[in-house]
Length: 181
Image 1 (tube, rainbow, N blue to C red):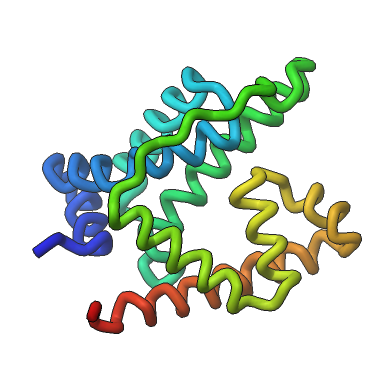
Image 2 (image 1 turned 30 degrees about the vertical axis):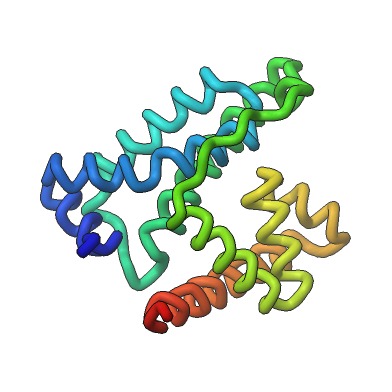
């Protein structure tokens, strides 16, 4: 039986290298795919992925499973690092990356199932929450950019994302508890 993400995180927090390797193997492909999509630059994506897992190793003991699932925590760290790179590019006048499409990363069956479950859960959210989350996580926009896009105050956007993420966590957790048929 496959070890749960929560169990792996607890072992990583106790400095278990084998658990860290398993967590890396489980999440590196999908995080790398997200980074390629956001940055359109393989070198930057590789560098950030390495930084993300270095941060996971150093801060795993600070992970709180009551706040987010391990996958969500990893995605948040990855997204934040990518936004930092995009901001640095803009400040140096390099724009948002190349005009080319990022190569697709082959998905495993579990990745495909997670994507399908996540899409279904996103569709269950109120439209404003769904859109705010998609703009933040799939397009890499900051809260201020989303506020401008949705013509809403920044505080409202932050609330939409927070409430939407809580609902997503609950919906995805409920899906995990339902036995596969």
